[in-house]
Length: 314
Image 1 (cartoon, rainbow, N blue to C red):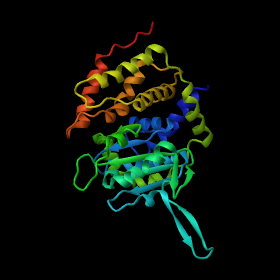
Image 2: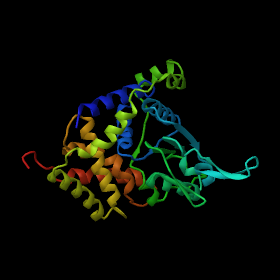
Image 3: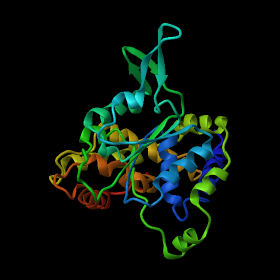
């Protein structure tokens, strides 16, 4: 395994996307981590922080097809998956593909669609396939969904159920830029123009390599036990209604492997686990009440601080 291909891949992706999204290299790196792990991202933030531009830039960088879907209450599952329509010229039914037949999907304001439409994403996200009228079609790889939702506005929305939230590999937040960075963005040309001028910086072969070879990153037994201690504490912690699922534990393992690879190491250290723990695990914890997100983050931070870190000698 050539570990330098991982670090080179990260630099090319982050630097290219950074031309559009200023000062958010960490968020770009976490999106890249989810992408390499074949995971999906839930991006919670206020409007106007660059969520759409981030994914447009990412799709251009990796050379993938990009589709944006604006979720509304009248959106139907067939609007996502596609339909069989009758062609009067040929006298036969033909399948017209929906926007899910792309590499990078932006599900904008996913919580504004009805639960029926939200759930139509599950098969595509989890099994990489779409079934219409009993016919199943495989989706092309790579495939990633990034869904956005506004955490401040709840009127006219349909909150994602816990089972569907658990399907997302990470939950991230862009946040506002620093003062100097925001002044730079205000005075430059349009971000959309910059996105259109971006070129593909990584090849399909590079993408296939990192998505395949990251699984060879070693996770030694003490570090694996460290991950499991964190996961099990979330299940025993009385502040949580439910703890991290097995799917969440697997996601933490994969994310730590990719984090190590992108840092140029062939093995995982506890700092890799700590780095990805919050974005991978927080949205999988249920504390009840309206302050679930912030409360889960606080509880998880205390749990991580209470778990003994394995020593290097171990």
